[in-house]
Length: 122
Image (cartoon, rainbow, N blue to C red; front, side, top):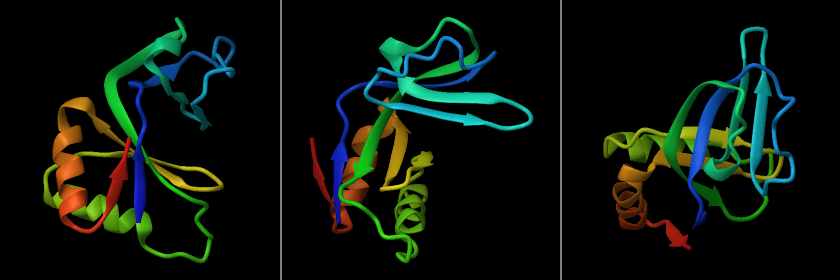
């Protein structure tokens, strides 16, 4: 399976609302529940109305479109990284999955994945 490492740094944050989100950013993942407004975006595009934020994330994207009938792809990657003590923040979109790791753990994540048959590209 091919995984692409994205070049920019990411921020995970909680917002007052979505009014200041820069939807022109290449990557912008939003989620709204009855308890919060969440955003994952390029660090350079983090809006000023954050309530809480955590910078220093890097992202990897599973290449290709994943069919909904596929089972266990994210579970396999997350289990493997957990075995190597790499924490993740996962995002699933209609087409594929993204795995975010802290920048300080990116090398360990890459090593674990490549040693276990995954192909990583920048």
